[in-house]
Length: 401
Image 1 (tube, rainbow, N blue to C red):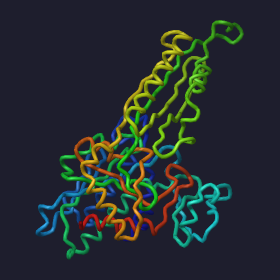
Image 2: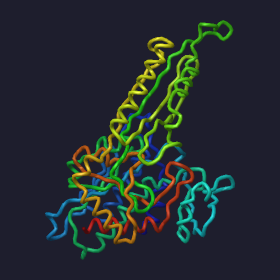
Image 3: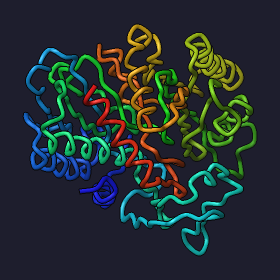
């Protein structure tokens, strides 16, 4: 099976995760895909395949003779997709791209003026959405690339290699992918998540991340007699929003610049809720950002009364850089594998997080490599088939070396 065929099969499974669910995985649809992947690992020929009750999938390709003492390497991807956009009933389209805009439907196009990097994919076969859903290349492309590389290695017994492990996780998009991942069972010296963007990206620096849940308590009075009595929670929430730094949002930052992101809001006169995420690569700046939110809550409570505003700030993950620096040879190996595939490696900071960030703090150094896709978490998401094929080649090289 080709990597594109495998990918198109996986995206037929809708697997949005749900941050409001307390189950693991957060959605039953992930269990359905997880079972399918486990069956495929067995069919391909991996050993010790396990699909556990929490939705995690594991499998192993044993070392070939004479390579049993080599370092053990792992490859990890996640099966859930972002809940930001509809992620089921996906209708992928394959476009032989010759330049210009890509029309997805009558109302939606991938416009060159919005995404000028599209131009470099002239001559490629690009898989897109129909403009009504996300595609799911984040991270079903990663799964497809890993399994296709495994199938190649097993089909070519003349290739010598050390022990190779595969791990597929649920709920990465809601920050829980590493929660119940069994590092000991995985049994690797290091691993790579295949969960990045455009072809060639190598990432070992990610955000420090936290969530901030702001609750605003109001006092509702009949509007006809509300003067000097009503405290409208929704208006107070708007005041909080307006006091946050307007230039420090995702739309105004790049590279190593951190941000505050308002991801959700709801409310009425009595109660309002705001959901923020806080991100920064630098730990000192990260701590200052959290402190800013706490101080803003204190200030507004001094104006409107104690208990009017509440903030619950919870750390999600940390920058893995400090855990990767002692193992920079694994970055060098990835860069060399890309060069062998005639792909220019590009070391960039992750403006997000991966399962690997958490796992690196649990003793499994785990940088992130590209999938080849772009415009994740939206209807403009796409991935060139040729980029996926190159990633399979790169993964096979890493497996051999």
